[in-house]
Image (cartoon, rainbow, N blue to C red; front, side, top):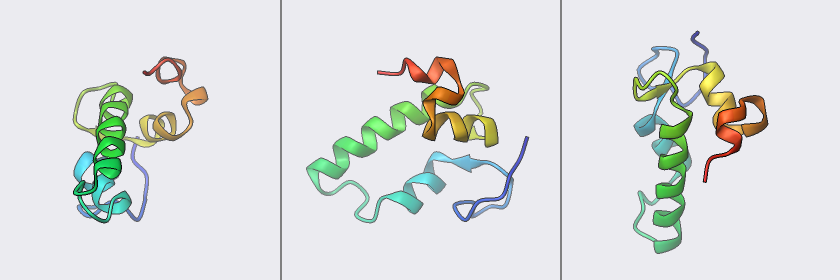
Length: 77
């Protein structure tokens, strides 16, 4: 399942970690607090990536942002 999002730089209908990171973090992890948030988000991103392709499709993306949508991501920690 693909979808359109401003984060997509390669227009493949999925968002990669690099696309997500570029769209959400401005200092690329130079600040310690940002670095910690990036690591947490990357771990959660990988957890939400159910098919293991390194990208989130619409269902996986929604689960990443709204863990209640997908039960397995609700228990991420």
